[in-house]
Image (cartoon, rainbow, N blue to C red):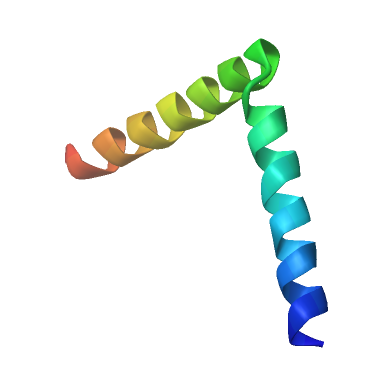
Length: 46
């Protein structure tokens, strides 16, 4: 079972890395990070 689990995790990681290389997905990630960082700064300012 341990070997199958490693294979599954490796396959999932490869899929994520492959998707992260696509420009439209990079834009989505940048937007999400910008939203999270703006929420954090809004919470800090009373």
